[in-house]
Length: 575
Ligand SMILES: [Zn+2]
Image (tube, rainbow, N blue to C red; front, side):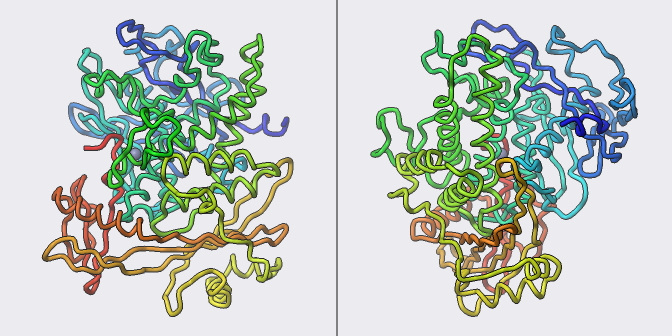
């Protein structure tokens, strides 16, 4: 598109893979993607909002001097610093290149700019018309997400809603070098995805259901891998692509956070933090190779997440391998088959997030949202739907693939353009619309519901743009759980409905939060586990921002217990 080329840009350097790819370590026995260089440039559209920092309208880097603890000097924004139209940040020197030593990327300047670049790249990915097709609002209500590239010493990184930030820690590896989580592309993408998803599906943050928390983790991991698979500049080695010497041809592409993982999992002989090509499941008996299957506990979100990320990666890999045509020209292969196949599945994975019903969404809820997203995005989504169902059944998430069929189209309800406009503009009109059709939307009688902000997406569907209106609502349901003496027996559980209206055809799709006995039981297990581990702090008021990391606040709301901030348990690694 020639028009797009004329828009002013800001060029921002970043690392597409972590620095494990720069170290020649023959002892770690890694089948690696061979990269010409992990150093790349993200070219952001300069909308006039870029400031010293780096910062723009929605993201600001906040860095501290490690000695004094004072705020570090801001990087200066240099308008048109490169040629006539391309802007940049002053990182003080310009000798970083493909042959630079791994340590040369450890400067304050580079870390600030590269973390910023990666966060913006992830935002652009989610917001593009290829995917969500709309701006994402942060769940914490303020304009800017703060990024702290060096929050202190530690083996972790996390998104913190209460303090509006993402904190990246660093530590000294057993082999002597320092590992900065802010220099790990996978970890930065992972944490940014938590922040984005929190804006899209905020109820997951306070969920009791382990699967809701695992959903966050799975999305964060799968997005990290997707960012690599969609990067046409990445030169995969011919071996990794075709399986020349490596029988497991895609395995090298599905590892997360190699530098960080190789250090903290050295004793296990692993050279990654997590691997998306996996055999994690909830039950063993239907797995194609039961002896390779790994059954995960239903109440441990990090492990559980790998069941879902394994499902999604498998769908992506099947699409990629099916469309793969070996070609002599590696770049041609990447551009014409590999990357488009990954993009096709990524679109479904991301769009499903907007169909997700509010409340404590489970894997089944996500599976149904995926099926709906596949059908609204593509004319022929049959294969992706079939593969997804098969994976859900094999991994023991559902008994039968038909459980993933979304509720029917709401043929009886008619919406026209004028009504849709009213619903968008006016809370009362939106409430009235929901009230009028509450039976069709599956709302229990008498329940008081709360409307979430309506959104309109502009999605690319084939060659055209489609406008879609999302009306989402949630309410409080109560479940009985006997957790411990001193804690009430009634626990609040958020449930919800998403109503999606295709504003061109005026077709309506509706998805509800699924509830079944298994999920209720899993919530009970989770509460007992949190209590047993001393992680529940009972409070009469909201004191979330002061709560210690690793603690979940239980609020007593007139005798009904409400969990707050369970998602704060999700660090890049489990404690
Ligand atoms: Zn996480």
